[in-house]
Length: 293
Ligand code: SF4
Image (cartoon, rainbow, N blue to C red; front, side, top):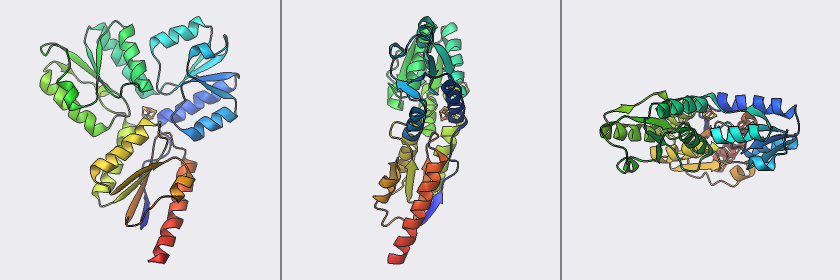
């Protein structure tokens, strides 16, 4: 078995920026993060060890303390409530997500109903829907071509599209095509596509499998949307094995028998140190497998 790193890996620009913002906030302890800063347990544990407390609600933060908004962004209602409570805000929202919020406001201000391609309940989708609502707009969330047929918006009017940054890029393109077929007045902007960091990783995994790779190991958290998409992409592309792990001991327990080319990918919030440790462990496992055959 050969073990190959699938590039790109390492932090995306949005995660790198979020970590810089968290550093700023830690200088003003006590600091609180509303929702995990990014979806990765190692990062969460490191921040927590350095004094950052994760909370699920602004009500859990003492008046006057510092709050960090995670990379996924928040709704205007949350921003207003944070200021009302006298909190010092450090905003770690990813620039790609901010672009979506700007476009959401624009659609709403023009009275254009919004179709949001995304996963119900995801923090980014909640923030975006809140943005449309706060601007007086209407929205519907879709995640498949089948959902497009159920939309209530009139077919002879304009419809705007936003896409969750970490949605499967190919699946989003299919939904977009179905929307364009049903709504001639569809307004497509760059906000209708997955972010380039997520898309590049998905394309690289797809290309690896299509070039003959039969196994894909994705490093990252079960709570990380872009990590889960990478595993789905590997399965859909035809990989015999597509598995996600978040720790080295999970790798040790993997059954890699029968795999000839194993590709290793990682979510955009997976630390590079973990990637290197995992690669080195897998190369050792492959060497031992080679000695047994
Ligand atoms: S994956 Fe994309 S949207 Fe998410 S933090 Fe990274 S750059 Fe931003």
